[in-house]
Length: 350
Image (cartoon, rainbow, N blue to C red):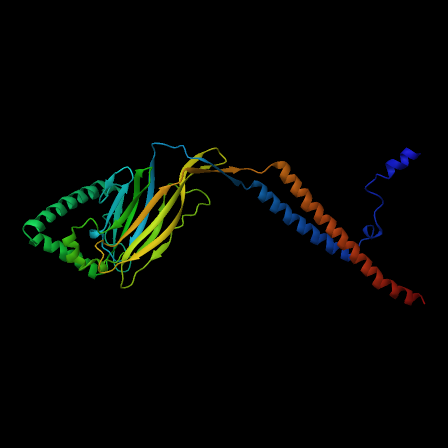
């Protein structure tokens, strides 16, 4: 008998309490509320289980011999396309001036609308590159004429055309992809591609070169879920002043591993901005510089699924806790109703 009594004492489910054996309106209300809460929590936990999460790992960057893709999309609302050039230089000594491969320019009017469609289609890339080659030869010939014979009619017509574009408020959007060596360096967008005498004739001094710009997109590789490029949407508008913008960029090589095991090599970065206003003693011309350096550490971001046992544990916790709370609430309401109705019953008997 002693053993049987000891086993009975371990029963965690004794006879139900009195308030659980009676059907009441308050119990029905608490039951409905409890079911709604449990259904909501179940759906939340199920959604949480099926969503992947990311794990970040860091290691030494061992990549070698690869190029660094730079995606740029920048609008200069106060400078026409004829005066803008994209120049790049890196620590290996490679220096490229007035890049046009994989770089396109869109002429914009004073309202930001595109003028013409000659730069919109990839089908005219060869023609566009050829035109730029002719432009370079033209500028070289123009430079010789300026130094030897002074301004001729052709040079004056070109200057008048550009000055008219500046007066009309033409702008330019520069976009495309730069493939550079995977070493520290910089690229800048400026009027440095012009002969200095031509630039003086067009702008009448460096202080009148308005390098106001809007950065629509600047990235160093394809985008992955959750990436944030800090320069996207940046607007720097100058009024009656000019200067040199410098963006110091720290690039962190990144690998994003999808749940399907697909690997996406890309880069993320942080940036520090600096602006140097022009003064009368400066010999440099306004420009927008992007100076980048690479981190020796690479970040690996992995997508992973949550464990099924983890899902069951959380589900038991939220459903069991809701059931316990609703049971306790029902017991309190039953006792309150019983305390309120019993005195009335006694007074009726008397």
